[in-house]
Image 1 (cartoon, rainbow, N blue to C red):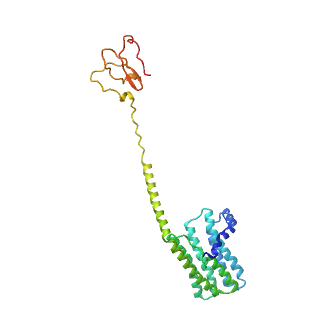
Image 2: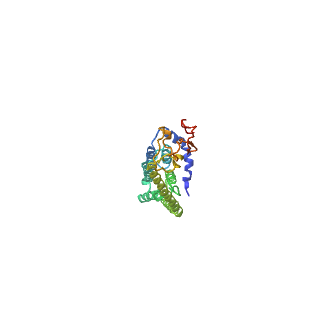
Length: 295
């Protein structure tokens, strides 16, 4: 049961052009919040000091401005990326001050105790919504007698002079609205929300652990181990002989050839084919010829 609060999207669309103009001129959202409080003070003054029929028009215009500024300050802050925690605090304080100022306009029209009761009751729905939001529930707005309905009732009192009945409706309706919101918030803080909160906490813990692991891995210096190249000939080289090795060629390419197995004939250093060294004895025809290289 949102009451006139259900018209907020439609009202926000009507103000979209003004919101773009304010954003283009870089108007601060806090300025709009202050302007809403000023409009509420002007409406209270008109309600208190102007005669009954004549007070209706200025009260209606000023309260319409108060509602417009209350809608524009938050929307402008979101559109321009200027949402801050201080701005949210100022917005809530501005709304409460505007509500109390409008009801203070009845001080010349109704008993003090009734004005005080209406003022106290008018703040209850907002306190319930803020308490629910602090506990983790979504912000609850609207209701049988919310901010918009209270402004409309003030216009009715200015036009008709029925200050006492209007204040009684404001007090009783605001109390009912606070109860409706409290029930809604209590249900919202039930098991489904708790389950979602548990899943959210588990996801946050898992994500934090994963990020910690990634940071630990990233902080380690990579160790690159380069293996020494080992040729097939070296791996298959026979064990060295205990007998002294004959003199070998001074060429670097034959410095690692194996020892000669037969000393009866001078050996050709051999041919390397497929990584295996083959040795054979030199024939008399080959003697005196040059050594053949690898292929």
